[in-house]
Image (cartoon, rainbow, N blue to C red; front, side):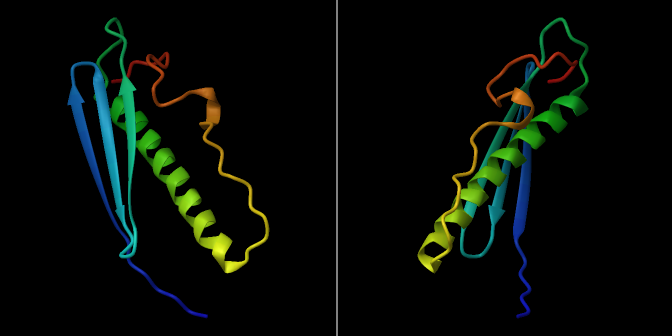
Length: 107
């Protein structure tokens, strides 16, 4: 079975003070999901905006990936798929999107 699709993704970055926020919007044509991520810089850390951008975007991608897994598992259940585990809400590496000051000079 052959299948081709085009999904549209938009990424928005917002920086204010020592906080960078990312919003990642996915439009599959049949579903729309939005991932959010935040990175904060301790006031004493060096100002390196690229690191804050990278962290905020990575966290938005993780948020979106979790939503996509939940949507896929929800779609699979009615299709008589075998028992599926729930996607973990735990973030890899032990940090959470809400956690401030990751020990690096980021915003």
